[in-house]
Length: 448
Length: 166
Image: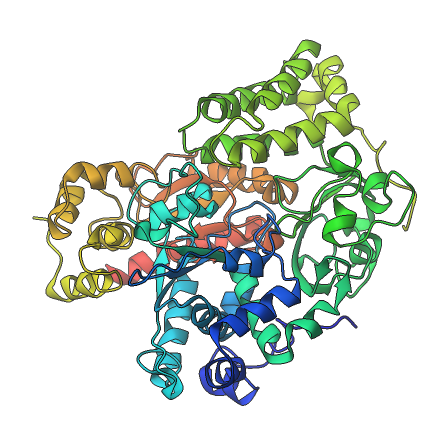
């Protein structure tokens, strides 16, 4: 059984309530941080832990914190990114819904380390019922002396507020999120300046994912070194994976980063194998933006090594033969599924979510969507496949924020690994319309 | 006449207090949510102008925000809105069939409202419920693991709720 640091107690009845959470050892990390540690010591533990941002980019959290500018007399802010919108990702929702006090506890320790006296949770507007859950947790925490003025007599003050978004994937990008929190359209900012220097209302700001901040609790409780001992290499600690698609047991799993992809998919402890007795065709292991891999490359790297659920192993081989850990949104396709149709839905998603600032993204995402729909409907030509390849290459790297890359990568990987399926759509227009894909060439002969 | 009740104005004050002095512009998103719920489920120009006056902003500052985010409805909607997710993971689990079934039952396509003003169908992009697909948002809550039978049941439930109110 894998070690759980975040969700170990999530199943306990009424753990959502303060009294139960406290009885189970909640808020111990706040006592330790505020009474026995300095802010820099908390940051030092986070650095030692090797914790990497759990939102998708995987940037070392302690390092991010150490970039925070600290000019005299200027407020600093911690903003928690709960704008979870990457298709395939629903882990932060689970954490906030079932064990909300863990996030509040992590925020208090983190805000203390950063010297922030006012912190925000920017949550996607659609998670409306979770706003209520979080606000109740904040009220309970405040009533019990964990928020407000002079917390635990330490002289440290903190208030936490929830700020709902209103439907925009782009607001998961940290500078767009800050624009949105300031009451504007979610248009990403040009960096530099980075939020650590000029963030919310031009003040130094750290933006971290929900899961990242929750992980600060076990790090403070058990030390950064203890956290770093879990996992392999630079993939330390545990990671929440939200698994979906054609599997027997979709849901949120906390893994320590020592298991193989094969075990994750086929073990009853996790996904429980492919649903309806089908075979594994392909998988997007880290949220819709990361490259799709056919079964053979998913389970084994190009070098023939077993692929592991770690940052390094999932990206082994680069984009030619690998993918990314990303946000941990694990989307599994069985052998009935059409890669062209799936890619089309993702292209439509990115077109819908492009903020429109940069031409390559604004125009390119719609263009890719239209071509993909044509191919899917049997109206495509062979040269359209090359055109798609050309367009995605001209979006990547040419936009202010990473949404352009996020839109380009799924299309590129689908063509790279499943080109014959695209070509089949062009040469079999009748069958496309009937949606008779008849494609099982990518299913691996491995576990049944 | 568009005007928040005293209770709601109090709520607006509390929202503004979440932000530092002078930063009440940050309250636009939450106050627009409140206004949409209070004033018929959508944001008319009159409603947006009113929100601007409450927050002491120029109307354009509210318009440009309201038109950016997908949760704000800029035209009238039915009493119940079915917002069905159609992105990859939901598609893999049959969201296309759910959208088709809603059409079969209610004769509305995405973006349309039934003639009696009761139901609106919207297709939306990923709502973060991929493991519980297919799904849709209805008001403040999610309806997950949708099947044709569940859709029948939900439609019936809405009709009964409305009948009980009248």
